[in-house]
Image (cartoon, rainbow, N blue to C red; front, side, top):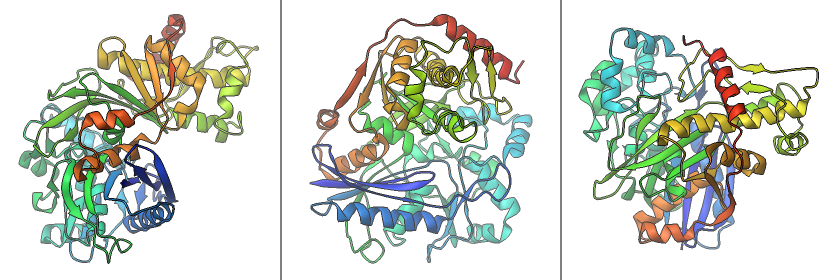
Length: 486
């Protein structure tokens, strides 16, 4: 038996066919366009996301030996999508999680004193990152599209909800708690949409999707809509929670870090809602069909792999991202150079959107190798900042995935800085794998979490060596210089 996993990311859709022993049998991928109407604005055409999903799934299914038993979905979180309840056509482009147009309205709500109550209910901050302020903006600035919402003809959702609507031919308008808990409209304690928050942001609750568990019988694909297939949709989760599940971080205290454009560190806090006074977010990890909720703490770092891309595309210091490892290995350390890659502000645990990037410690002896090594060190330092706040010290084991986790030097620097083991799995596409695991549990491909643990395979284990605390202190001093906070 196998599972079809659809991973609808920010720049493209990946589809994987995953076998019941945890192997990737086949895959498909299709990019879609990014739209930047104004500086700081990011939009996606929902129809283009859907067409990319169809294309990626068709390619993956062509390489599979048999028809999958079920479908799982994972997605870019927080993105606000509107579509017609009957025709499924989107009246306008979606506003993407990266979009910063609502910074002013979030600041006004903060000045009006709403943030403590919003944080108490949601575990989040008032930030343009999340969905609700995007919906408020649409109501104010696109009255034609919003009129459909207030009339009941147009519905609201995140990318998971939109894809499920398309897959089912409009039969289901649902989301799951992992995605709902990123909207600023979901109550962590109540486990549902909060009328108080819907009123604050001006969102009609009737337009929002029904919240269902992360796995189980969630819906069925409509053959006329989805490649002639009639399959159960039996798993769904936001991308970072799916990666936590794909890394089989099922025990309280398990920690994973996904190294992508940015890095996202999550730790499983079990059935307890753990709140952070140190810049971490509280979120739902997943919900069982029984209704039992598992929560997580999350640290979001905005620029990690993107810093390596900047070395390549912005400065021309390297030709390819993988070249960074070989070049950084030509020097024993960064030669005192420190790079704070606050290229789009600082995320967790600092949360300073106005911070800007900084390079210190340059001398006549500084070479491009030192700067490249300082960039890899910065990623390790950024993750250490979050993990130490998250765990009160160091994690016993950090499970690493994502594109930059293929860099052995970075993984060793990370182990050294954390004073903890870093484990990298054979399958680093753990976001899609998590969607497959959830769907397979929901459809009976796997019977338990223990069965899933057995499919997880270690690629390499990085043991901690000597920790350069002096370099970390230089990093902390440089972060203070880059920050706009007093």
